[in-house]
Image (tube, rainbow, N blue to C red; front, side):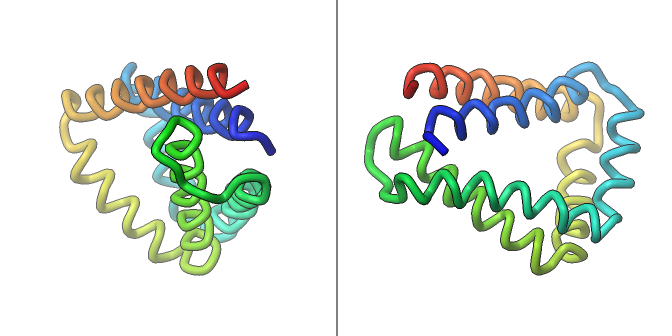
Length: 132
């Protein structure tokens, strides 16, 4: 997979999980909490995450000080996250639940976290078009 495709996919993930936080969607938060408790679903999702990261890193795996290097660095982080999700789904779910309590304790913090995620989505979308 090219770096541009990887960057666009990561941008879409940020949009999908960021916009509901901005608009304070309680149904999304309830779905997310339920999702994090299901170990089998976390393992399934980790296979997709690992596939995306491995196919990206197969083409280019060296980190450099430019935009391509930044995307490769994110691909390495995604790979490590996918491994953690696959091998330790219970620990990953507990960690994410704790982070949710800290980051989403107030509505203002929830909107801020969603806004940051949407901005990261825009950044990765821009990088995807720039690297194409």
